[in-house]
Amino acid sequence: MTGLGRIARRPALRLPALVLTLGALAGAEPAGAQESSSAESWVVPTVQSVILERADRSRSRGDEDAPIRIVEISDFECPFCARFYQESYRAIDSLYVQTGIARYLWISFPNSTHARAWPAIEAAFCAGAAGRFWPMHDVLFERREEWAESPDPNALFLGYAEGIGVDRESFAACLRNDQTAPLQVRDYESAIAAGVTSTPFFVVGDSVAIRGAVPLETFRSAIDSVLVLRGHDPP
Image 1 (tube, rainbow, N blue to C red):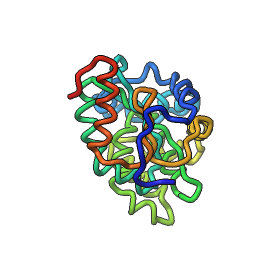
Image 2 (image 1 turned 180 degrees about the vertical axis):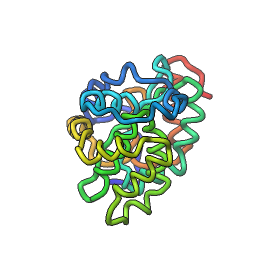
Image 3 (image 1 turned 120 degrees about the vertical axis):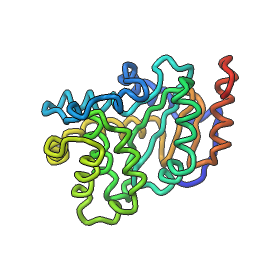
Image 4 (image 1 turned 120 degrees about the horizontal axis):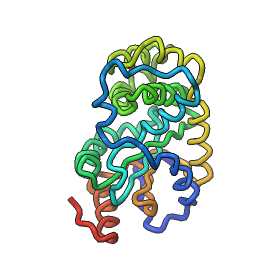
């Protein structure tokens, strides 16, 4: 089921499987690290192992020593994921991530009925390998209706990449050679193993599950309750 969902304070799904998988992100860059790079560095590497490492690291933001983390399991083509982005994401980023309260991780989980979800995720990860995951993340949600209906979404993704400063040739090679496929498969298998069945899906503090695009105040209430339980004041 997708859409507006619910919060489970003691979720039945297998969260440890998902949390363990996210251990590879422990050394991820703080919020703003990508945006502070120079344009000359926004080139996708040519070696796949380097692409995968950088793409993996790029999709987390916030202080790695933050008291809690928020994991989003998402699909760029999902309309309810887009609703969350439009109605809640920026507020959560401003209130919790940029203030050092939470570390934010984005995990891909494409719906099998969304034909362009996989290439959109690939575009985000290829941009991430150049240090521009979050700008591409924003563009993909903001222009979702455009590329989701396009017969050639990759042509649009190339334009989006150029627009956020990513080198066109190296980005195109990353898409053409499916360089980020192993990371995408790992995300999918990890989400399935954890019992995730729909998007968007969130895990707050490695313990509280939020299913669906719940209202911002409901989301904030869940985050704040975890903070209070851990002895931290909500913003």
